[in-house]
Length: 273
Image (cartoon, rainbow, N blue to C red; front, top):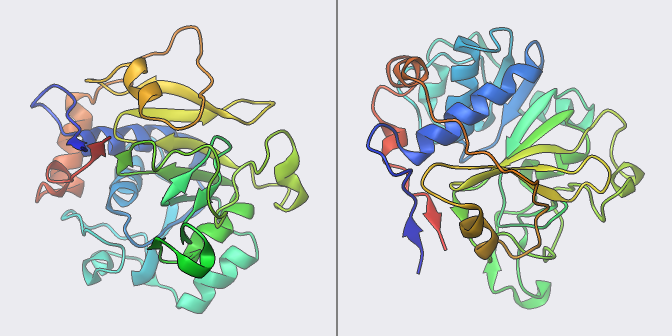
């Protein structure tokens, strides 16, 4: 049975920790144009926080609302919410958004999935035989842009063996395909593949040569063994796996007063198992 993840402290929630770790890593994207999908409150908050801290020159488009550079301080729970237009610098037509993906103009982006395998391939199609799916997903939606986005990031609300599988049932978001250099048979040359995978209990990255998933850090409250026992493929394990750096007081203050004044991130149901 799934349990709600807990960082072992009442100073911050696991969703706040995920947001802050995402924001830190967006420093590498400063000056680039990015996008988020629909159920994207966590990466939306991360981009807002990154613009206030390590990446002030980010440009981003907020999914279904098409808001450009929104500056909300009350975090919407979806990118389709009209609140995303608060303080936005403009609005883009959805056709223009789609064309940016087709023209490989996105510098960074976030997406999730129903399944992910050890090479970062993501499935949003469904579970089981296509003619008789056990669970039907929302479809490929924006995950197909994975072949053209320069820096992509994957995130999940849940960590278990049903999500992290040896082989996905379908590939809607191509990661590193079969590993090695197989990705670049179909991907744009500048599209680096997924950089990090954020889950409620850890952060993963990918080996530089094999491009298999590697454990990057373990979130407070959990152990390497917790990650291994709840992951359905074999992770590459460095000799020493660090703990994900906890939020600083300054990061939490900015997040709670400039991004999420309503405390949406304290209520997120992120699970393990």
